[in-house]
Image 1 (tube, rainbow, N blue to C red):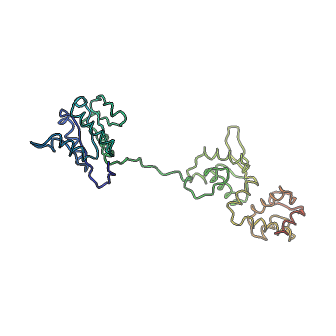
Image 2 (image 1 turned 135 degrees about the vertical axis):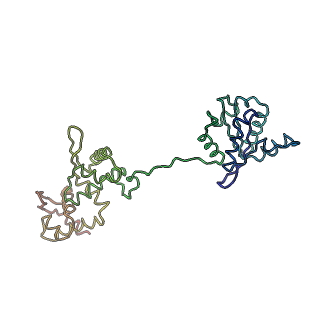
Image 3 (image 1 turned 180 degrees about the vertical axis):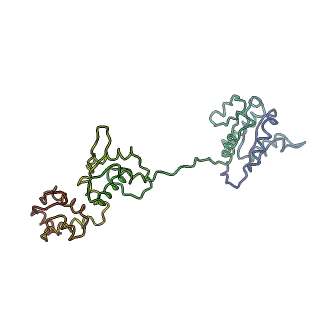
Length: 321
């Protein structure tokens, strides 16, 4: 078909047996006309004295954008229908002509049409759905199923952490945000679920992501015998990974903590928080990370951290910056 646009009226040649004219073809052709399709039907196009061959092959088939072959128990053995079908097949080879077989009566389909999708019409009194498909084929359009809205977690503007999916990343980020708000690295999964459910994340996804986060050493989880996960705790490594990605100027904050503990007498995390105005949880996690690298020695107690010793290596690192 010649790239039918929505405002063009395609030409359709309707091949059929005369026995099917009254019971189906006339009503069918009228339906097509009402949908803006020009239909070449012998009853309308042929006048007394016309050349049957010239009219069918030089006007009907030659100008057609599509040929509809009405297959029925009456037409499959008709010589004229076979001639028109043969001519249509030849034109299809040499152009973009579309052949649309319509099958009535569950009749046999000619072998030359086996590779062409045909439209069955079981009830010639009620075939609106089938008719709509035929019209869509004539105009070269496909009625697409309207898609629903994608889950919010697939559209959320987030940073995806290494080795994590979007869902994992949202859950991890919300866990860390809550930790900063509370000033504690431990949390309840029920509370976390209420935060992430607004992203269309369900409990099963939450449970699975918590398992993944633990496997990546970003959190530790407490499991019940039932398999439920009521509590979790963000690891120092996990909070550091979050901080590097999501906290602005994180490395500068780390340097600020290091310079302060070297150049001041402050050895208590609460005192450092007051003096450099960085959130307590962030300061304490920086101290824990430094201790894990043996750059300082610390003593943790309920409510804070005390620095016991500062290594020479840490002092040299600070001097080099």
